[in-house]
Length: 219
Image (cartoon, rainbow, N blue to C red; front, side, top):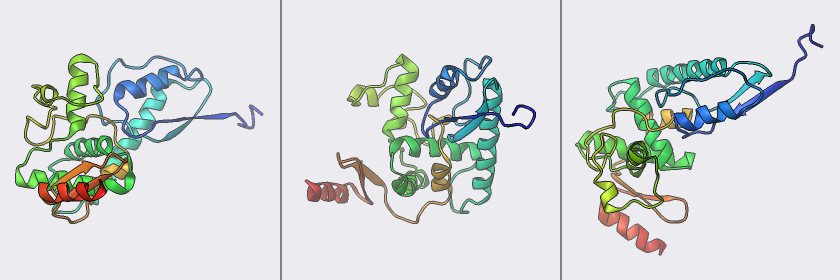
């Protein structure tokens, strides 16, 4: 079996929206992989997906595959971007895609969430994304509160988009292919707001008044 190449193939799945620390922890915990990993790695450089390996393969080798796949997906998505998308670089696209990935767990909502943030960028509005504030808090203290307080929203951090204009300095997680495509090929909409319904979904609207009316209708 060995001479014929009939070896057992294993797999490891990396979900969308994990941070670098999360992914490195998954790789370290896989007992059939060998070798060390870096202590840190830039967010947004690894593609969430299922990867296949053989017992004894190195963790560093799997990491290289993940980086190469992410680069290929980003390059392809960037080349196919809509010309009106107000993002200057692929890095900006990955950054916004990571925010979209963390703001909604439903792929069918990602396009509208992306469109809201892109519309805000065009108008010079702050993104006011809870996910970026949570990331800022985690960087500062290592803790991620379940509910953001007024003090949390005022934290001084370049990642706090309630305080800082534009995009944060970099990604806050590792987005998947769908989130990247959502920010580079968003639907056309005038929506500027979205709010969680409390039932796992969001409502979208062009004004705060419209959001309030939609939420009232769901109550």
